[in-house]
Image (cartoon, rainbow, N blue to C red):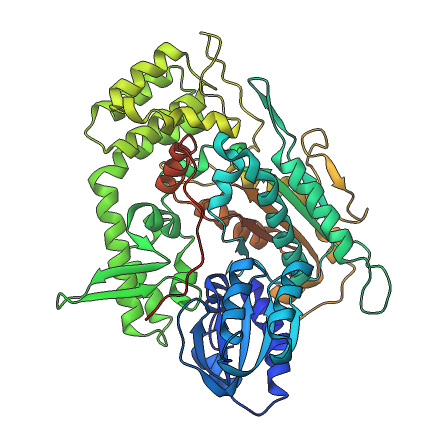
Amino acid sequence: MATGSEHGLKGLVWQRIKETIIADCKKSEIWKILILDHFTTKLLSSCCNMSDLMKEGITIVEDLYKSREPVPEMKAIYFMTPTAKCVDAFICDFKLKPKYKAAYVYFTDYCSDELFNKMKQSCAKYIRICKEINISFLPQESQVFTCDNPGAFRSIYSPHCRQDKGKTLETLAAQIVTLCATLDEYPGIRYKKETVFDDTTLDNAKQLAALVDSKLAQHYEMDDNGKKKGKTQAQLLIVERGFDPVTPILHELTYQAMAYDLVQIKNDTYKYKSKDGSEKEALLNENDELWVKLRHMHIAEITISGLAQLMKKMPHIRKQVKTVHLNLTEDCMGHFQKNVEKLCKAEQDLAVGSDVEGQKVKDPMRTLLPVLLHPHNTYDKIRAVLLYIFSINGTTEENLNKLIQHVKIEEDREFILNWKELGVPIISSSSLFSQRRSTRRDRSQEETYNLSRWTPVIKDIMEDAVENKLDTREWPHQSESPAAWNGSGAVSARQKHKASSQDERRSGSRLIVFVLGGISYSEMRCAYQVTQSVKSCEVIVGSSHIVTPVELLDDIQALSKPSPTKETFTVLKE
């Protein structure tokens, strides 16, 4: 494969596409047009590029929704999601005057009988193949996937969207099943116990676990040999975003998380100015070997001299790539020195509950005040106020009103209040602030930077899971894993030795963690760190979508706004 990670999710998805769509197409010598919708465009872009497709006999890639010139002598491959919008667009291509000689139709997932019959009635004589290939997730990185559904957050947590929640959970469950199918795993499933708060029960993780379990059973009812597939050496954990409100709003100082938080990066594209003043842009993905080496490093380790040394060891990397990272690290450090450094100590003290010397923070308000008095921007102040509230497990209404006035967000108090929709205590009924915290793993012996003492809760969960230490009261089983599964060497010791560590992990066990409602870059990093330390267990993380701190705050604020109008389908004229 010319691009992407040869190992991991991206490699698996590309291999699956080659074995299904590409293999079918190669049976015909005619060069073909590939027609994609918005999701499948992202999917294909994540695991291959145009030169890869050209090698496989695909000469043109088109947008399903755009007006296209007819090419009646060519066959067209339609790779699309099984939605009414996509099927309607497909029918438009053949109903009156056919645009192409024939159609090879591939759906990412299960297509309903209703949509299939609609398509068949309108243009059956042009359809040569119609298949469901079971890939409806995005391989974001080698160990990270998303369902490409930022709107799921609103559908699940907004009081205005209760009627959409069931359908959203059904869709996410189907997407998780296609991930398991791509990995050829039939995992045992556990979920974080529901939260009861203010007479409201948040049981979305439980509901999603039940849906995934049911759909997996249906999917694996029969294997290719007509036998029922048994459980594999894998475990799937499902948790809601509210399980750790601290991690996604902290200022992170590892390269990837820091860059996405502080620098304007849209669709993984970083824009910068070269020495001659011209505008440049670069994609931050796994095709960039230097990015893969740097992304989880602490910014303190990425000095100019350190970069120069690293680049000497990688002479094959183009000069332009080196320039990208010199610019990006300078951008990050510029923001850090300007205001983030001042924020980090207070944030870490509030998050951890103790200072650099290990002394307990007795008065969190004294830690917060210097941040409020400094001319930081409003988002940074909101983040600090939230960390203060989380640290005391909710504050009084009177105190909250004072804080809101201090930050000058009287008209936008939902940035803070709406966290209750995630089951996070904001208003405490008691004036006595309790310091209730879930038990954390002891990391006192681990080396950390003073401004990066906090460890994401998801790392504790991953390590407890692979050591078989998750409390069954907190993590009930939706379906049991095989008795041998403990995510440790006990499983992999029975496997034959393989040449590479990556292959060795493939033969061991897998832990899949799904965060409902968005995952942060620092939580993504934990999957790689735990995989690296455990060796015999590969950890894969996924979510409905990836969030930066500001994006999450905007999503939280929007929960109390009325629902936007529904999207309608139109063919765009070029």
